[in-house]
Image 1 (cartoon, rainbow, N blue to C red):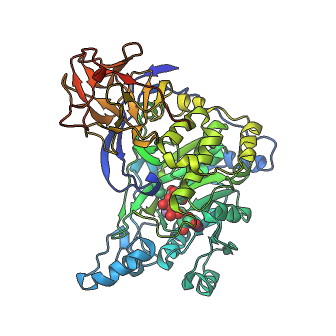
Image 2 (image 1 turned 90 degrees about the horizontal axis):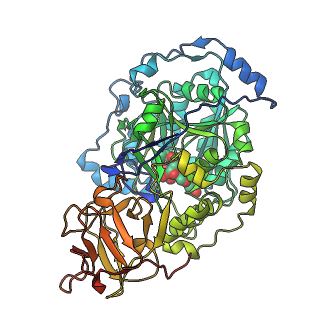
Image 3 (image 1 turned 90 degrees about the vertical axis):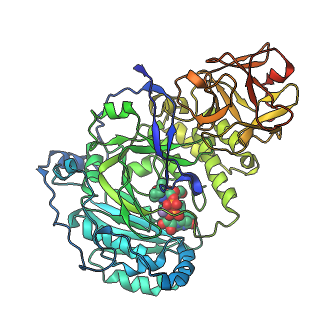
Length: 576
Ligand code: LR7
Ligand code: MN
C-alpha cells in the first residue's frame, strides 16, 4: 500500500440527462488518493456447472481470430466506413421534424445502410492479440422503447456482421411496450429472415430498461450475457476480447470502449482510451481521466484491461451465472437510470472486477435529451432509482446524495430490504472500502469534518455556488436550508468542496473561485477555526469575509481582523 498524490484530468465532463453524455470536452482536476493493492487474484470457478467448460477454454489453443479486411458494404453509399452524412439544406425542415422522434438525426440514420462498414478503430497492439480458440458463446440482449427501425436493425446487423458466428448464440430483443408501427409485425417478419437466431419478447406494459433487461436475461441460452443499447454499432474484433477476459476470471464484468456515433451526422468517432467511469455527488455517471496509478498498474500498456470504478451501464458482458449470483438487477428501479452505478458498486463491493477492455470498441448514439416519456416525471424516477443505490450501497456517503439533491428526500425509495439482504448474503464490503481501494480519486471525500451549509455570523447568509462552473466566482445568498448549491464539505485535506469543485484563491485579496479540486493543498487549503469561527486561506493567510454592501453576492478574501463579517458557522440546520 502506497500513498500517492495523483492529479486527474478529465476530458469528458459534459452533463446530459444523468450526466452520461460524451459530447463536449473540458478539463477537470479530480482528487488524490491511495494506490490500490495490485494483487490479481485468479479466481477458480470450482464447483458450478461452468467449471469444466471454463477449464476447456483456458487450456484451449491460442488463436489469432481473423477478420476479413474492412471494405464498404455498398461502395459509395452514404455513411460507409463510419463517415458523416449531411442532409441537404433543402430538406432541413423535415430533418428537424424527424429529429424529435428519437432525439437524433433519424433522416441521416435512415439513409445509411443497415450493413454499413466501419473502419477498424483498434490500436495496433490489439490487432495482434491472441485469444483462446475456444470461447464461451454469448447471447446479445437489446432492450428498446420506441427505437427507430434503422438504428435498431443496424445494431443487430453490426452484431451479426462483426461477431464470430460460433461465439454468437442468439440475439434477444426485448420490446418495452413500444408504440411504433414498425416494431410490430414488420419487426417479427424481418427477424425471421436473419442469418442468426433472433428472438423477440415484449413486456406487458412499460417496464423500464432494468426490468426489460431482466426479462431478456431470463431467456438467455449462451454462457455469457452481453447487453447493448438499441442504437449501437459493433466494430471489428469487438467480441473476442470481452469473452476471453471472462474466461480468465468469471467474476470480471467487462465493457468495450464506447465510441461516439454522432446524433447529428451518424459519424463514427473514436473515444479516448484514457477515460474511465466515475460519478459526482448527484450520482450522475461521468467520464474522468484515467489516473496515473491505474496506468502504472497496467504497466502503461494502453491495450490492457482498464479497471474502472463505474460503468456507463448499457454495453457490457457478464457471465450468466455470475449475473444471477451477484443479484442481477434491482427490480425496484423504474424506466431509466441508477442501475449502472448500482451494478458497478455491487460488482466491486461484492468481490468482482469491473473493466473496460480497450481492444473492444462499440459505437453508441449519444444524445442530449431523452426521447421518451418518464411516467410520473423524470426527476422523480431518476431520484428514486439513485436513492436506492445510495441507501443500499453507499453507507454514510449517501448523505452527499441527499444533500446535493434537495428533492430526493421527498421521493420514496420503496422497499429495499431484499437488496440490503443481498448485500449481507454476499458479504459485500463497505463503501469506505470501495472509496479507499477502487476509487481514491472519487469526488466524495474519504474523510471530512463537516457536510452542510456555511453561514455568515454577521449577515446570516450562506455560501452558494449559484450553480456556477469551475473557474467562476463563489456566490452568497440567503440560506434556504435545502442543500444543493449551498452544500459544502470541509475535508480532512482542508478543502471546502462542492461536488467536484473546491474553493480556491490565488491572490490574498481574492476573488474566491470554484475550481476543480486537485487535492494538492496549495490554493485550495483552508483552516476553519472553531473558536474564532474564521475560515483562513492558508497560502495567503487572508480570511473569508462576507460580501461588501455594494456587491452582496460575492464573498471576499481580506486580511484577518476578527470582525463578525469574517465569522462563519458550520452547523447544519437541515437533516437528511
Ligand atoms: O423505459 C425504457 N425502456 C427501454 O427499453 C427506457 C429505455 N429503454 C431502452 C432504450 O430504448 C435503450 O435501448 O434502454 C436503452 C437505454 O436507454 P437510453 O439509450 O435512453 O439510455 P442512455 O444511453 O441515455 O443511458 C445510459 O444510462 C442508462 C441508465 O439507466 C442505461 O444504463 C443505458 O444503457 C446507458 N447507455 C450506455 O451506457 C451507452 C453509453 C452512454 C454513456 C455514458
Ligand atoms: Mn443509449
